[in-house]
Image 1 (cartoon, helix red, strand yellow):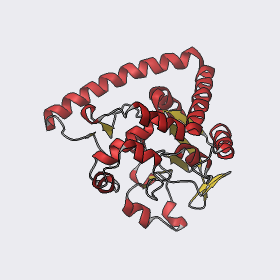
Image 2 (tube, rainbow, N blue to C red):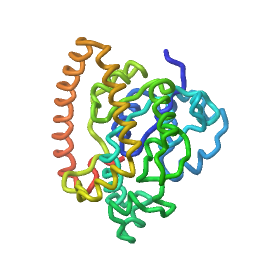
Image 3 (cartoon, rainbow, N blue to C red):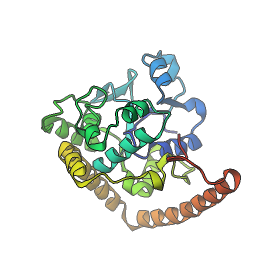
Image 4 (cartoon, rainbow, N blue to C red):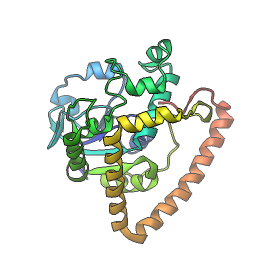
Length: 280
């Protein structure tokens, strides 16, 4: 059995709630250490080593305390993570935070009528880091001036994705990513529903100017995402046709599973209302 302590470096709005449900299906509750809610952040700001006794997976929207080698809570960890198109991720994050009353940004965004362009551009402390190359910051662990192009941090993030983190997946290629992650973590139960996704009626497309602004302010993230996609594609190609066939078989199986889940959910609870489907 793999005895390493694994850490899910969870980029917000990137496959996480679905993946965390899969993790819960494969690990005992005492083997999972989650830090997501405000209460969990406060409670686990500092923890004793005994708190991680028996834990196999730490998960949360947390930066590593050290990236080379990767460490969190003073423990060496094996890192796995997922990336997503940075502009699409940013749009999804904005809509999610503005649509779900239980999140800590909901009142601020709505009471101040913060538009998507404002969300990207603002230098207000609650927003300054969100819309400006956040992925590069998250995967490098380096601070930088948000008004400048973070060349050094981008190189560090690329290095970490290729040489430091043990697994890097792509949300847009989730089935392939999941099967590779299953080998890495020893997962057996893989069928899943998509969780915490935006309802169709809640989705929006910002205007062309706002999207152009997002691409401009996240130029390094776009480079990093293309790098990660190329890295992932190379690793998948190395697995050959046998793996490609396995992906097709799993996609077919999981499509049937998801259809069954939708039917059961509709029968037991009726059509779900709200902006977020199967929220966390």
